[in-house]
Amino acid sequence: MEKIKLGIVTYEFFPSSKVGAFRMSKLSKYLKKLFNYDISVFTREINNATCDLEETGLSQIYIKHISSRNSVVFLYKIFFNIIKKNVSVIIISGGPFFLFTLVLPLKWVNKKIILDFRDPFYLNPYSIENTVEKVIKQSIRKHIEKIAIKYCNLALFVGQYNHELYKNHYKKYSKKFFVVPNGFDEEDAEILKKQNHFKFMELYKNKKELVILYPGKITSYREKAVELFVEDFIKVSQEKSIKFVHVGTKSRLLEDLFKKYRYNYINLGELSYYDTLCHIDKADICIIFASGNATEETTKIFDYIALKKNIIIYNSNDKSDLIWVLNQHNYPYYTSLMKALDGNTKEKMPNLCEKYSRKKQSTIVHNIIEKALS
Image (cartoon, rainbow, N blue to C red; front, side, top):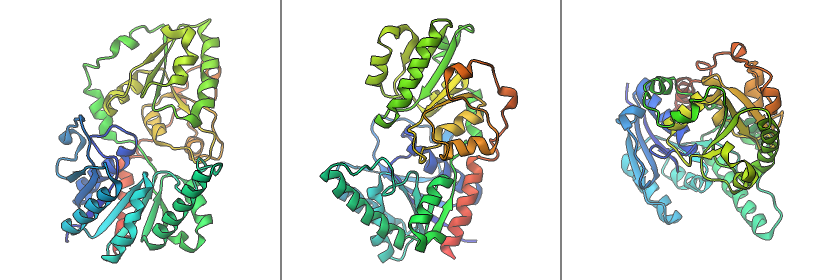
């Protein structure tokens, strides 16, 4: 049987440590490993980043890093390289969603196209039309998305909520839409076991001190959740030895809120995925600062449930895929620090690694690719 020649267009890919890199990086790894695809990845150039491609399972995949200083030139170079590699089907991962403008030119050269919506684009609730500039931008988004959906062969969504959102809005094209959830790579758990020289072990040596972790960026739409957490944290810290560790870009909001409690708060900056995974593994409680919208991303939750962590979600929306995943499988979570301190629930935590494995994700996508090629 002839190898499937797959092109993947994604702004983030290993060695990038950003959340957006993992979906396509893990998918590439397992489509190659399980189905022997001939894969070409077209992504942005990354400076000062290191990644062991053998360790990530990507050593046999062609990765073309392209300078992204100018968006038009970036898109032209991607298109040119796709033609050069003569791939038969292309997955375009958004965001950023300007990559979806490649759909029309790729359609003109008879390529099969699959869109991957990691988040909503035009239907994103964060795109509030309250200024002239935003109204214009939203109009542009509307046209880009409409054209992309019309001319793509199929489209993928990470959760049920976004899937239904798009099915209801684009009823004419709803048969093109499929759900491919995020997940956890079991092989990462094996790598985790080998991390014997974890350089931040000092943080976790005091067994009498409770360590709470949040890995990720503090964006403006998470501020309400952050404020609720810090309010809880200050109350609890009066009676209990407690520490908050933040892995990610420094947050002015956290700095200000913890001004009087500096000794309880540590920011470690941005770390590699595997170092971050070590922190998740060692922490007592892991936090999700939710936006309150139903389109809440689910990436972190799979790392948490794979490592059977106690989870607190602040400012959640009961309709979100985040809550749906937990409730669907009776995975316990809390909505405040005080409730979480009532007891450890590890004995009640189901093993969901197989259900949401990256291998399973790649098998679903393989079947969808075969559908696009048929």
